[in-house]
Length: 247
Image 1 (spheres, rainbow, N blue to C red):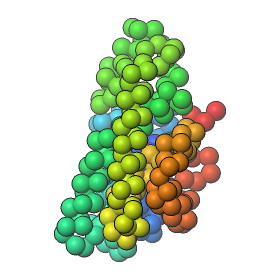
Image 2: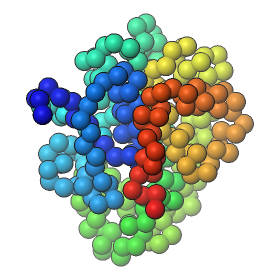
Image 3: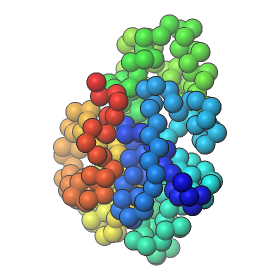
Image 4: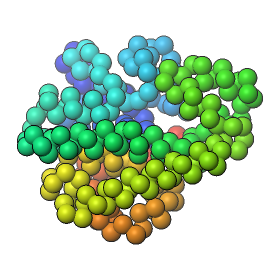
């Protein structure tokens, strides 16, 4: 492989991987796919930790150098491949886009992990003894305390799950307000803000929780517009939304 090739380390079920796959498709950027099996713990193996010491996906390697974190990756891709930009030219709108991404990274994205792990991904942790759960959590570079919130076979306590749902609902209502006067979260052009929000809304559909935006018509219309884009299909190829955790 050429040293200039772009490699994407990603997983189908990873919401942050879905963000980057969408951007790559929307901008028409070719890449070498490097799938990571989260269910097999490949993200915690030494060779991958050499690429991303956080033990998370996605990561890209471009010109032989690794870049981590989906929000950082997507900004990088827009700088290095400026055609079909997903960042506003106007400085104020650009600030608003980044404020949205920051908000979603702090509120919506971490909140969706709770119901996701409760229903789909946390089975292997729930089956561990307290000692085994601690050993597993100690291997996680960033998500140790999140894993330790899972309390045996019942998963997360109701208080944690309810708080996460409340934060998701607040995020959706904030989106509804912004979309009441714009086609997209920042003005009338798709930006990285919309792509940052997209996977959480997709995951709500997978979770059977579309009730959380059933009374938000602007969010529903926004989601339909996203689904109509060819990049959406590229971000979510068949069987990828829950990946190897679907069975």
